[in-house]
Amino acid sequence: AIQYELSITDRDDRDLFSNSAGTLFNFENLDKGLFTAADTSLYYVDFDDETSGKDAVVFTSSGEFVHQGFREADQVTLTPDVTFNGARSGQGSDGFRDQYYELGLDIAYVTQVSEDLEIGPIFSYYYRDYTDYEPGGSTERDDHNFNIGLEMMASNVIPDTMILLNYSFERNKSSLETETYRNHSMGINFIKAF
Image (cartoon, rainbow, N blue to C red; front, side, top):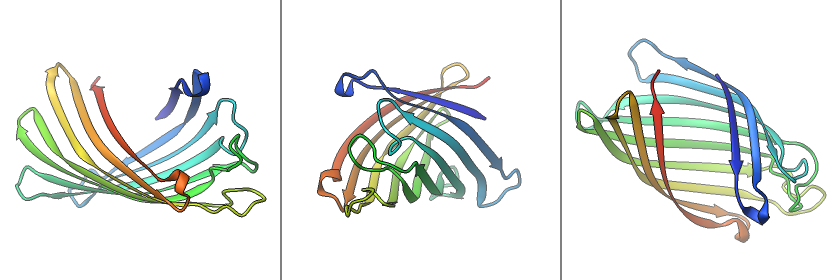
């Protein structure tokens, strides 16, 4: 697949925040088994009004493992992944560079409430190690990111469309106090089948 993403925000009165383009390769295991899929992507992200410390070539790779839950219809999904953000040499407008390695694990438990409704908790943990965070300086940074939430998937509410609702609480613990934060996020996605 070819992917393109555009982010728009009112941060500092700038409408365009970033855009990215790249490729996504998906491999699926058609035989039954614990390992079900692998995804690999390579893309370039360009931040508007930022220097090379933010713009980057990003590589991500993940695997998916699915196992039966407590009930026959329930599923536990484990998704380990690795990311390398190859931000170019130099500093961003904040004086730092976003080059990092990231290791993570997503866990989702899905239980079928009815034929058209699934719901379950989600959890993720990511460790991010920034390399040469302050070019020419001594500031170092690594982050531990935790996410816990709830996800609901409804089908046939709209014909041939799946509705995905989610809520999550995020806690980022960084070696830099200014980068430690908490977030609440809510989302809704409409996935159309063609």
